[in-house]
Image (cartoon, rainbow, N blue to C red; front, side, top):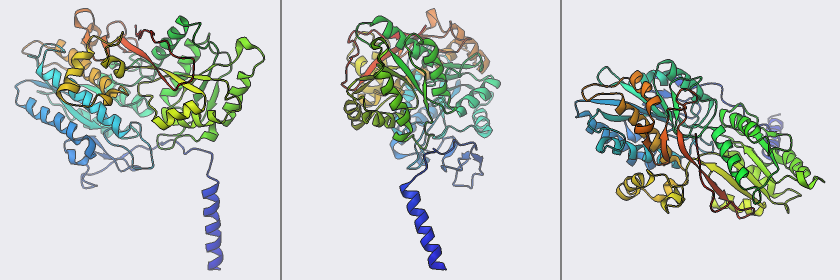
Length: 501
């Protein structure tokens, strides 16, 4: 009998290995649970799924070795600031850890490191120069709070942030906020309820808005901005760029693809010629597999082979996470209409692919044009459209701190720099020489960040006045156009950046 049980068990294992489920795992519905300091030595919150320690970071030994140097610099500057009579505290709330393999994370460890480097460059400039206002105003500490690889929301995280301030040295802003996830929305709601100003760095989901969360601001273009930038590009290049498109979107209840889908559908309606196609994307830890896209690819080929040449499909507006895109490209490589090129349009900050994945695009006869919040490789060469403040940022980041220039490529460093810079600019406006600003005072000043009080940031000359109480987004932000893959049509070399307004 025992032998029979063993045989059945082995058979079940073989079936499971060769016929994995097509259904991706359900998104997490539970959050981390508060844990006493004795549990793994974590004084904050232990994520029960990943065992990450979420909350304030004061001991760099708990962090991955690759980010200890930059976190050490931030903590060292915080200690220097403690010696000054007047200072305030800004919280950098962002993922500072990644999930154990094979699970994926909202931000890669590289992106975590680049974000910290950009934030540190802004902190250093804030405390040693007049780049973002009167340096004789109160100094600034940047306190680190780990948001976790999946950015789950928990009240204990909010309580931990609030506890970092006191009457003499209050927490007057929270910056970073990671990517646009459901947990980000819940955190924005909680911080807004407490009256604490926020400045998102790469949060583009349109659902993150000052209309719903009054103290929310962001240096990132919204998904509507990205869609508007793509429309501007297409409108200005009718002879060289595609005309006929279709939206392919992730149907998960995920703020980024959900609001990007809505933006593509409304803003680009004149270019959308076919019904939208949907797929169930992967969760943070489990990207979608190529077979998920098979039905969509067959429909794309049907639209490509449409007898009406004026409606022949030429481009796809992709509203999904970058983690799912390689599987989409793999499915496109196997399509029966591969002889007809396709252009994929995307809006995102860090839409980066590996060299192998770019080669996959070429094999699939596909190229990607994406509206991006940054294009450091072009800006380093001082090409037309380079923001006025980029050179000063680069001097500190690359020339003085010796961070490699290629760590700017995905845009995270410059975006986190500008999030910190914007908060500091508001702080410096909220105080006289003898006063300590409050969170309420800083919030009030965001609507005055205009005209004489612009932020000369790494990614644009930013103002908040016009949109401060609407969606909280900065205007004057450069949206750049970038292309991956060799497949034509090519992005016009003289395509000017779109400035948010």
